[in-house]
Length: 199
Image (tube, rainbow, N blue to C red):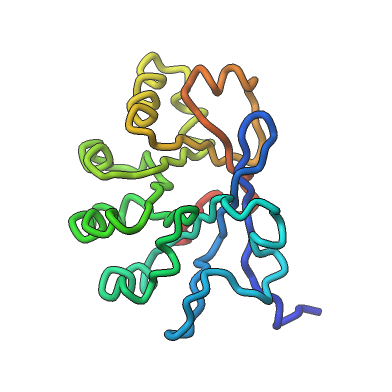
C-alpha cells in the first residue's frame, strides 16, 4: 500500500574519498510550491538534509529544470532561500545552452553545478566560460574517458578554477589514490536512475 503523504525526495549523499559526508543531492527540486514560503527544506520530509547531518554547512544540491528553472530566471527575488552559502543549483547542459546569458547573470547570487558534461554536441567553450562551482561526471562518461591521455588535464582545468569535480556513480571501482590523481574531489552515491534530470 503506497503512502500518498510521503514526500518523494530521495537524497544521494556526496562523500570525500576518506568517507566523510559533505552534502546531499536531491532527485527532485527542493523548492516548496507555496509562493510565500522562504524555506528551502520541507520540515515534514523525513529524508531532509537536516535529519541526516549534524553539520549545518553540508551542501544541499537541488536540480532545476523546466518550470522551476523558468520561474527562477523570471523572478529570482522569490528564491532568496537558495542563495545560501551551502546551496548549489544543479542544471544540465541543455539549460545552459538555452539560457546561458540569463544564468550567467544569476551566478553572482546563486551557485550552479553542471550535471551532464558530455551530452552529444557539447561545446566546451560554453562550459569553460560559465562560473560553475561544481562539475559532476556520470559513471558512463568517466568509464569511457578516464584512461585517455587528455582526461586528467580536462579535470585539472576545472579544479584550477576551484570548481568541485564529483563523480556520480553507484559504486567506486578505482582506488582513492587514482581518483585523487585524476583531480576528482569526491563522489555522489547514485541511488536513482542514471540521469538526474528526467527527460
